[in-house]
Image (tube, rainbow, N blue to C red; front, top):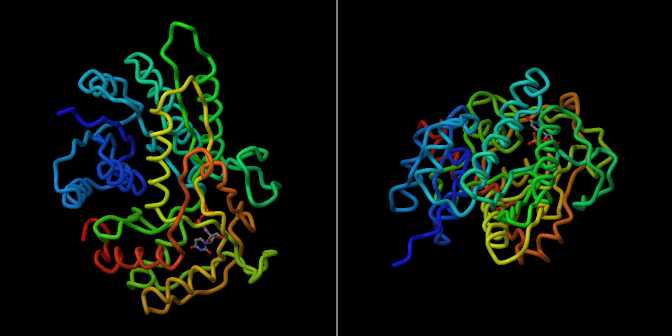
Length: 347
Ligand code: UDP
């Protein structure tokens, strides 16, 4: 019997990483997690093993640590790496730029050096729609102008540029790098089992986990950041995508990289192509949960854009993938997870 294809998932204990591990395992790959647990919890391993009904290899370590990487690559034959480890809080990145560049840029550099040394040349990178400039017209195509407005976004953009350089710097004798940057829009929702979901440490920055924590009484009320934007109801519009659709997009991209082909650097938006306002998200959550979500209108959050949604056609065309789940399904799954585990993974 042939062994399943091993995929290293950095950040595999986190929100998106843990869902990606499930999708990979369910599609016949053998995911191995590397995570430093700086923004995730060790309990995730039991939850994942319960969903998958089998043991998982989980390595606690930092992607910036050469010794950890060497031991990992020397011990396993990885066909590819999905690199999701990184820091992601926009406001924090403005306060601690060096630690963001160290983690996100330095971490990717260390990872790529180790991959080069061990001959692993297939890489999925977790990028973000924040790399698009503010003035770009909606929907955002991959060739829209790029201009991030905070250190977090710039760290993603720098990594994209570094990876693009790497993919074209081939010497004929080299094995070929095939690299994909996946630009996430707004991932929400949870695995339908309710066993795993988004579990931010501390106060949530993002809308869906905040709403869910209000609904279970962990927070008093939501603050809606601005209601005077040039949108239909005045609140910010985003392209929310179910995390299961998002990770299925990763698996499609991985299959594309692993299929025959020359060197390449690919960029794909992972979004639905539809925008929803903050008030629409609240209403969908209330429908799904049957609970009211008290909110107040507050000042706009600095740096927020009015609207942001994807043109997802390139991924449809190249990968045969598209997001299928509705906003109501996203909120239903957020609620199933939060209601079963009001305190998150620790509960
Ligand atoms: N938002 C809000 N209250 C919150 C968190 C977010 O009104 O407590 C709004 C935010 O202004 C934006 C939308 O919800 O319009 C999505 O914000 P999130 O931080 O989840 O994603 P991002 O801004 O990174 O797209």
